[in-house]
Length: 380
Image (cartoon, rainbow, N blue to C red; front, side, top):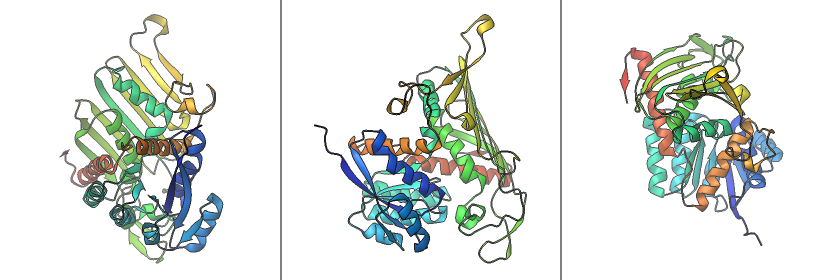
């Protein structure tokens, strides 16, 4: 007889896009992965109880609270999952850790490394499991590249490059602030594309390749003023609309990163490529189940890029899904992260990226913003 699964009661803070992605993961994970745990969508907290109730009804949460503090005080909540604007992460996470709750938060960890450090201190002092949802690590093709690099398939690494392109803020009439467009409000978000999009690129680069030793960056804000969604007043825009970065990694390789919300025609164009002495890997979110591979050892007319369809049972995560040839999508990257978190609980081992791991990404993002203002190289 199979061992009975332990219950993990989840308290969700927020009801937006990322709360949907996380709720999907918690709902699905026990159906696919044998982690020893069965997550229960216990409660959701938000200031708008009407919208929170609609969210709870849709996803099957048992109750709604108007204040996240009620979740932290509740004896029947095991894990606090934070899916609210960046400026609220720290207060909630620190309070949850002090209450002995497991703490998970949507990326980035915080608006700045300075703001994130007390969050790290709090979870480590309390000894509670913690994780930041950098989900692109868990797309099977990206995890596969990580495994191959770790095995030395590329040999010495020379270059790592990544870009994340969008186009949704080109219209100057798009407001800043409020529920829908808080990512354009520097007070809520901390930064623009650097903390929102480049943070994903940086996290994956640190994970696959190496720490970043130094960098120089240029940033630009194309629309200087926007109407605030709440007050209706025109205000200066404090976030970065675009960023380009040159970096040196600790392993001696060179990095290039680009992110913008002004690349007309792109909605979520995340690409990465890594070049080594024996070959190269490349990946594109728009074809997320494929890895492009160049093997320098192949001679003659067969030399060239090949496409690996990352759907076989011996590929990361895929043995738990369907049959070879059938792929999974964006939502399942969160399911994989939830599975790793739950399996880590059983092994008494944290699932990366922990708050401390994610703090390093914040440090790099801070350096990008600082260099964008000064035009100088920054040593980390």
